[in-house]
Image (tube, rainbow, N blue to C red; front, top):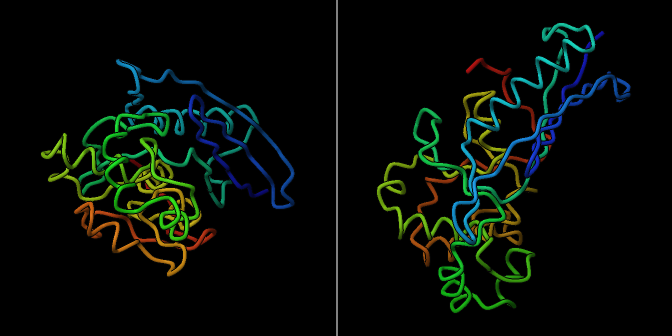
Length: 222
């Protein structure tokens, strides 16, 4: 029998589910982790924590249900949406993940809102306004407060993008995830040029957008 492995990588836990081809749940395993909150408004996590949990739960869900990893024919994931991870050309994280709950970029968000008020921001992104939780504000915060990290960053990945890069070695993202970043134009179905020009964020530092459900190459070990 062949199986589909599905991950739900949430704010405080990873869940792994095995389904058969008829989409019947065959097995389940989960693991919790503790967020890092060193100060008010700061919420981070070592990206390796996510990846180690994914690997551990893959092993456990297979072992508990008596199947070989070779019986898994497809892997997919759903994740928390706005967590940011800057990586180098080899996909190595350059700092802790800035978790979606992190509100450190409120000052940057106010400046962005001054240029793109809610009516404009909503019309281009589909989200009400820019606030400190918004990824575009967080990227601007990194650019201003951690310029060396910004300079070294090859790609700014969302959590799902990061997990896909660990499996496949590619830097891609999907549009259903991008729509809550504040830097994706849902009208023109592309990165929002005016926003990137205003913030000074190079489009080359963002992953290649793909359609939800697109198939990537077979996983690699890392």
